[in-house]
Image (tube, rainbow, N blue to C red):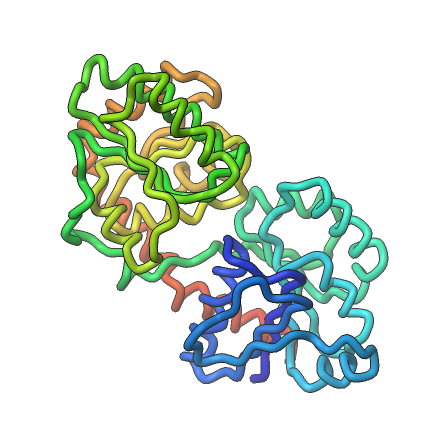
Length: 338
């Protein structure tokens, strides 16, 4: 099967990462995959699939689209390309955190929604949100996957700095609400003076966090790693006792699943996507968003029982190994084509 994975603007981040994982695993299963985008800020390296900048000429673009068996789009801007193709067209919804993305999605559905054969949402929470934008006849929930051979139990854990050790991984955007993790740590260190928080990632909030850490007298208890190689991530997860997220908005939360694959429990804010994952997995506790005392209390409670969650976390993550998730996508492809 010839599959075109579409993006508007390809750069490092959540949905491009999912696209690459899907492309890689589809290729492993014998399919011919091309990753296409209007523009690349970062380029896939050493991949078994092809990648290409989309033709600017309308006639050439139409011929290009018609050369595939199925088109799997991951960005609202490229929904318009469904107007140029007779091939089965899928829209994969990863979320719309900005006003610009929401406008793009709304107008793309208004213009081209009838040409989209089905939609995939990355969670039931995302499915409900997408249905508010457009009444698709077919919407399927398929979770993002995790490589359970890469993210696994009993890795070395060489980045451990404290006891208990907490971890956050993600882009440091305002909605990630990392400041609340620091405020919770200020409470925790009073009772647990050896506790430590590792914050892995980079973004626009990074420059504001370092002075805040100093002002809260947390220099010995919090480390900002900045961006790290993806290959090191499993060791960071394995070094912690509990993974924490104070995010104000998510539709899935891939780091939660990666932490579970390493056998680590979760403490996460009371947003729908977190509640969905932790209700299904039982792999941790939800705290009331904005309640710093509740967050600190849940972090300590779960850390004291972290080992008891290990097998529960791992079993849940194994249900969403990329091989399983990719097969779910292939089943949708087959149904559309047949």
